[in-house]
Length: 312
Image (cartoon, rainbow, N blue to C red):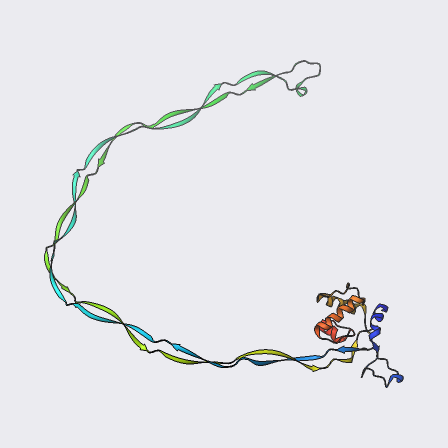
């Protein structure tokens, strides 16, 4: 614990109070085993938003042009009349079936039906021949000379194809059906007539421009323009206060390691998570306190609480 006490003892005061120090400025309500330090509590500020006029209200005279509309008028060009129109006869086509060739019997030669079959033909019959022996396994003893073996050679065959008649050629009679043709013939469906055709009257339209609203002027009110500014007001002065801190009497290396790990997770360089309070660890603590607006001058319990580290 010596490395912890050396780093923290300069700014700490153990709460073991003797009667001699009863009138000295000491932490109030301190209990045995607790450590306090006079730390610098930064000034507090509040931000208020105020509106300022950037541009006063004004008026703008706007000229609105006259409005016109286009209307269409219809007028008679030619009166209604009629005319007689001859309607020619209407024809249609009908199809008639005409016999071209009558039904008849016709003789037809059906060719013979053949099939190719395969047969095995002996090329060479089976025979027995003498053949040289195959070595020591067929010798009678080592004193004999050349070995000859009596070998039976099987017969040799080859496959040949032969054309076989399955059904001979014959003559059959076949009924040829009659042939018909379709002839199209023109016939009158409706006789010629005369129709009366009504010719409707002819009209035309013309467009004209008509004034709907005359030209006028309008006064447009332009409201004032405001902008917002932030004003920072000091609500509390910078001051020195007694705050409970970690010191040699209430600190364990495990607590320092958890502190170093939390600072390292926040992106601070603590010089390694080793449970020892060195210069880099103290610098990282001060930088974190300044960033978070915490009291500086010691490893306060509020700093541990902000880092999520349990001091016990």
